[in-house]
Structure formats: structure tokens, C-alpha cells
Length: 194
Image 1: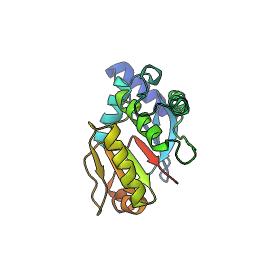
Image 2: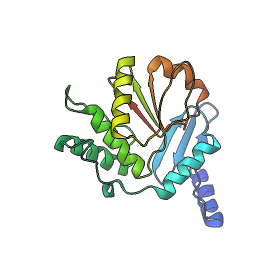
Image 3: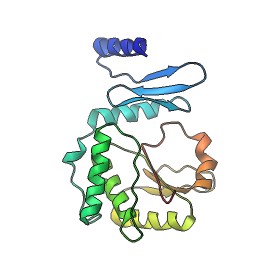
Image 4: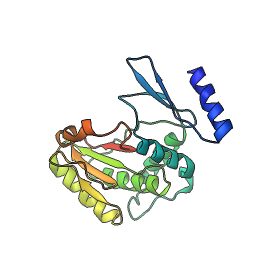
């Protein structure tokens, strides 16, 4: 790990390029973005496109505290508070979050507002919304269409991965395309009712 960090520092010094680091022992692969996150286990290597997208996000990402939450999407105080807490944890390099809210309190709208903030802050470019039932996927997609009308949305069905920025799928539909996607295909994965 230390040797890889030294190589990355040398690349930064010589070429001005921030390097991503892979660590492996032949059985396990870890991906390390030293400026943002500690090493984490991954199932394989990112594609060149994935790394270019990550580099773009590193270069142009805005501080999340400076991006306003859209009140027409999530106008309740507790929704804005949930988004702020997730944003604070993202700034602190955390990668997993759980929002537990009662039925009818606007979990989907909170999620949409969070995705909106992350897209405008250039923190994410590809989003996956997973749900365990087709009806939940349809409902979520309708809500996203209503509140983010300028974003490209698509449903993963029949083993095809669409080219939209925000994808919606049930777990079985996702499993049909999962093997064909790179480890860095999505920047944000939302698991609803899981």
C-alpha cells in the first residue's frame, strides 16, 4: 500500500495527474482513491470510461453544503435535514447511508431531492434505483419524471442496460445485466424497501 501511494505521488509530481490505486494479493482487489476514500474491496477493475468519470467528478465536484436543496421536491424540514445529514457524511468520506422514514413521509421525494443535489454538485452522473417490486419501480420512476423532468430516465428490463443517467430496476431485472456492467458503472445506488 505504501509503495503504491509513493508511485501515485510520483505520478502527481511528474505529470500533475491524480492517480487511482488498485491493491491486490491475487485473490482480492481493492480500489483506493487516496484523496477521497480509504481502500475498498471491488469485484474487478474499472473501465477507462469509469475512471475518466471518477476523475471528472474529483475535478469538478462542488462542496455539498453549497448546493441548495430544492424545496419544491423535498419541502419538509425533516426531509431537508435527512439530505443535509447524508451530504455531511458524504463530505466525511462515508459511502453507505440508511434513511428510515414512516409510510407517507416522503422517502421517495427525499431521495429525488438528494439525487438532484448530487447531480447539480457533479458528485454523481449515473444512478441506479432498485426496488423489490415492479409497482415500486413504476411509482419511483413516475415521481422522478415529475420532479426531475430534464433528466434521462430508463427502466432496466429484458436483460438490457439503457443509456439514461438514472436507471430503475427490480432485483431480478438487475441480476440479468449485472455481469455485463463494470464495477464502477453506477456512482449512486439506491435500494428502496430492502
